[in-house]
Image 1 (cartoon, rainbow over the protein chains, first blue to last red):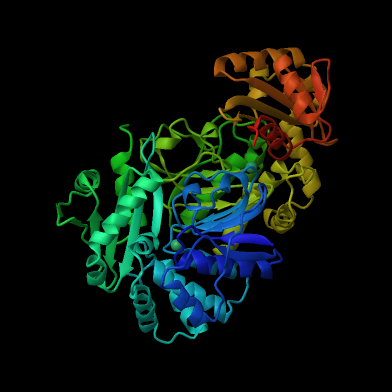
Image 2: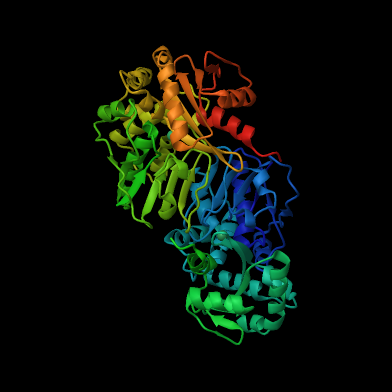
Length: 312
Length: 312
Ligand SMILES: [Mn+2]
Ligand SMILES: [Mn+2]
């Protein structure tokens, strides 16, 4: 059974694309099983429950040399700790290509679209595999999640076309209402510890050469006031993360899904300087208003990469 | 115009896949132009002449940030010198993934098949683009060249299927006779300088950590006796290459296409030790008999990588 898994701190795409790709490979004669690399956020259980799918198991420690398939990520910092020892035979992803290498020719499928699920729909079509209702539900949910129902600048015409194609198969009549229900589930944070909130959608990126490691968290919510009301706790959690992971900096962006705005919590003078110089924004009350920069992948990471890039 | 190019020391696949992919992209609304990164071998002019296609121009020096598409390679050591400054937006390749990274999400299409052209045929099908006679000729030739008409262990069922599909469109009735004519053209080396023979199909690979760089040349021929008759000259050319490029070692494999054998020229005690320990073969008369190991990609490079890999 080929293990298939998405990134650590899994989002909906990381979980559902592992499920959908494992099912597709199995139908194509490559027995595969989906796993997760961490605890689910608050949106994904809603999606799985609505689709009637079990939560995938946590990936066990794999022995060196085990063949694996990656979805929705490719950088070792966002994968299993022993990724360099494993044999990556397949990758389906929509992120920039990081430090991945393979010892043998592999199957790699990267497209600059808004969601891994959009690529997976293409794989069904190329293989002339009819899309089943369950897979349609999972892919539809992932695309709505990754693109914030087309609000994110990562959205491409392929993502819109995929949603239009999948919705009837999934039996979702009102896509807007379904997306709102997903986002409400994601925003229903209750008394979740600040530590957990920080890590719900959190990735570590190396910037510059020699690389310094930054932790970049995002909380996408329809209720930003609730999250911002816990600013002090969140800053304390960010400070612990910085110390424990030996990071150069930590940013936590509170993204208002419906109004498409980003208020980013500022931990210290280091982050303040970088935000000011990389984005040209001012910091007040421990927050930087990043305006409509709601995509970490498309608007936050590239600006930080350019900022930290060595002079040519 | 998006520049599309294959590796340095281009083989038939590197040239024809650049031509075919540039034509496909252009038909899909992405104006593109094929280039080459070096002089052609003796097989490719035969293929282009038979197809009635001009030799692509040498790639000019591109300014930093220029978007480019790579075919049939991805490692910087086999590409333009300033590849890290360019913006790679597309890669179609069938080699292992090396040191490539991208600053933005890109279109990457890697499949573990025998030839880049086999992947390109798939792209035509997915896009429902009818294959034109010219493209069929170029893709057919590349697959026959890269797989040595299915003799190479890199051959996959997809390559065989592609040839069966392409031959009638290309108007090639007797595929075996066409392949033999291609291989005869490639073997018609005349008074080619030894330096040129060494570099016709020559790639530099980093092995181990810290990496040592090895130059690996292959001469595929239907007339190995002619090449082996020039052993002294070739060893002298290998010695110069080692000095000029600061290499740790240089190997030149003389592959008998029709009998599927490999006699590798041995430059010094360094290469002799590595060949003995990595392949378990003995050296006599300045040559090592590597038996039926005729694929650099599948049989030579992986063995050397395993040999030079740091202890786990
Ligand atoms: Mn994703
Ligand atoms: Mn090739």
